[in-house]
Length: 149
Image 1 (tube, rainbow, N blue to C red):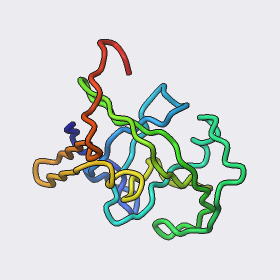
Image 2 (image 1 turned 30 degrees about the vertical axis):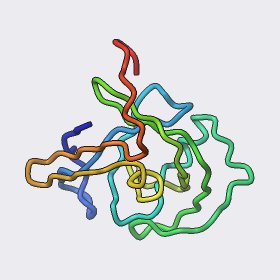
Image 3 (image 1 turned 45 degrees about the vertical axis):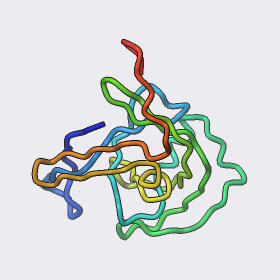
Image 4 (image 1 turned 60 degrees about the vertical axis):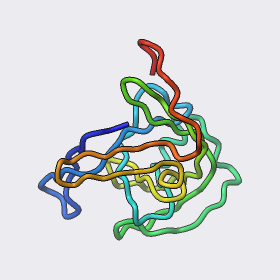
């Protein structure tokens, strides 16, 4: 599955820069994909804690820790969830560990090594500005039925 880069604000704010961003769907929140920045330097996949609440994910009893992301101190509670990536012709679902963080100061989620990169062969082409993700678990993407998400 190949996706074009998308513009996100620069780390210092202001100007936008093209970055490797893909939409990922969270089970329980199927109405729309979540813009996720691929972060090959991050071990964990990190989402806003608000998304867990909206998706009906119970974080009671989830392991908790205080972490720093881009200079922000956050409370992270981790659990396993089902995620999916989709394009016009295929869909791939996988089980992933995700840290749901509060507060979440970003307008995007982060896909790290444990929750994303271990499940895909990822090619990032910086000059032509695209990212390609192919499942690595031996299961090919599921074909999509016409009109389905």
